[in-house]
Amino acid sequence: MYLDANRPIAVRYDPWELNERLRHMQRVLHAGPLKRQAPPAGDVRRDPSPAAAETDDPPQPARWVTIVSWPLMALGFGVFACGATLVGLSVTSGRSELWRLGLPTALAGQFGLLLALLLQLAGRSAGRKAATSQVHQLDEQLETIRRRLTGALSDRRAQRIEK
Image (tube, rainbow, N blue to C red; front, side, top):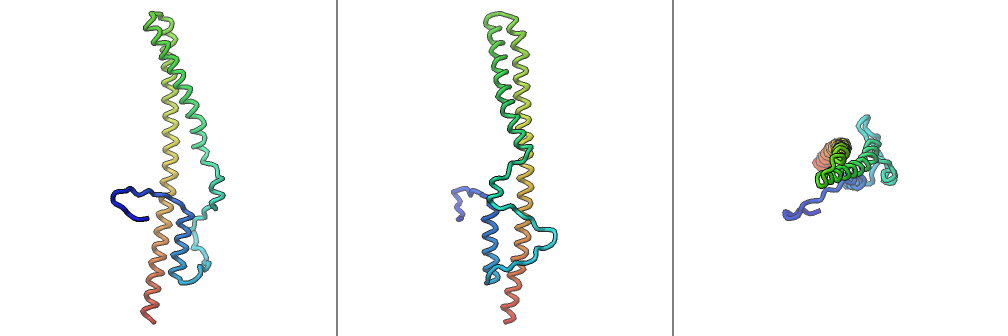
């Protein structure tokens, strides 16, 4: 990826591609095949394979929010449109019984729309928290890798100096 001042950079997060690049960097630094090392205690995260990640279900709160909020939004909009139509007809025709029926109906529709909006915001907030958590985990992994690579480079330099 080349940096161009005129084009924005599209950021794409693919953990498996990143892992492959990191393995390649380790092979280059060690000048040989990647040797299995015992994982350090406690700070290792095991990611599922790409095939397993594609079949995983999304988190339950997000699914519940989607299942409930969109039909509620459609229902709220329909009820609001019906109530607003009744209120409009009562104003144009002068029939007060349509006003008494249309106003509570329009208010109930607006309440449904407001509730659907709040559910959507709650779902977005939960998704943002999950994404933030994943970004923090990625930052920690990259920092660990940076430390290891810096240590490996300094070890290689020390070996070259000794020779």
